Image (tube, rainbow, N blue to C red):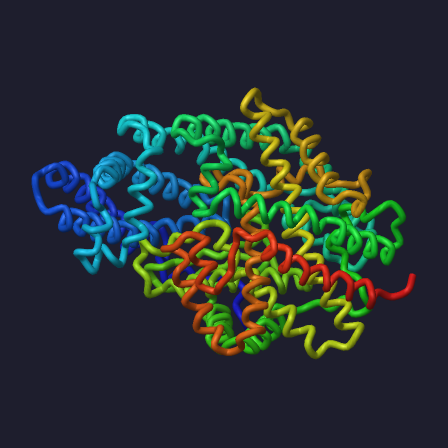
Length: 594
């Protein structure tokens, strides 16, 4: 069976000029007007509070479903063709439409926040009980709202502010061409393609690609620095206006996570850094380096096999290992590939990296990867399929109950990585186990150590940005300092990646600041969940699906308690990190003699 490596969006629309797309645009306008009229005509009239809240839930739920389809199509289309002006205009149009709801939604939220005994009222209706968490969270955030006029202004200004900067950054990144010499010939290749050369078996290619990549940022660094400064400046201003102590506090509140959980997790991570440096130094020795691992060899394949995968082989490998956990998970992955839910290969105009977009209205997902055959690409595919499975578990929930917070967003994806790795290790001989452990530890180092460096960088970036805009050189300096602090002597301090701030998309999301520690949370929480699975066996699987289904309507603490996990305990985080440290010890034990 030949697998199509381009995704199909026909299940959404055939084009942004199609009758279906235009009909839904018209429906979207009608739904927006209905919400605005209802708020103006009904909300302040003396009437039954319960029926008012029910009416709002139905109105906003219907709009959200229509809007989600339209946004999914435009976002997905633009991600594989960032130069498409027609799609870009459609996306801008949708973003503007969304701002029309700012005023009625703010009015409703303020009204809701001033209701006495809201919980008692919620208990009077099955529809409200279904949306209990959504309503209570909305009411609790009332105190961070500005005046109606200010909220409208901020919403509209973001389209020409942070969203415009984010769009520019995406265009610059996806169209960035790298001049690189290959076999004596200078070629112009997409940045995403050159970055994938970090996985090549040939050390000369890895080094050459890294140096070409770093050089290429000189073309865009000024513009990218302007994008980052513009976005972070806006974030700081609005966060302060709303009454948050800092963007980090705002992120934690929006993540349904408390500072105690974050602090204990970070403290446990700091304790574990020495173990990760042992892994990095061992890998450095194997590759013949003396002063720590140069950044261009962080993803270098080691071991004799260095196996490459075709996309079909990757599919079979993932599905087989997913099936060792559950048929539901394996069948989901197989179905996603067969039904063309995945856009696989890098190409000019396509954004780099990988993501999964769950589309609740059609009960499907779409996954973007830049697959070139390395083992890391296989793990990335498993990771994104995990996100998709998370969406599958939320299909029967109200669309208003599907908005899970950032830290829990990485739970299912990293759990799937763990399944693939651990299943593969069971039947591996020593040589195979060594190669698999390298993949495990390479990934864990990114999710713990590199993520910690990004957390340090973003924390300091916000502190500096309060006072002034940072030049690209200053951003490079902050990034190098953060990498040195996190990696220590595990990396060669003379060959680090100063432009990682330019490379990582997450820094450019105005509504997703500190999108770094959630990955560490996801890895360590998933490790804890996997340990739980090993303890209780098959009965865990149904509970796991219930946990994923609950992620949009509980706090992180309560989601964890569903599995008897206490995220306030530093010992929980230490126990998960100990599992990684055991892998490090085994990796060193199995390492070939130098």
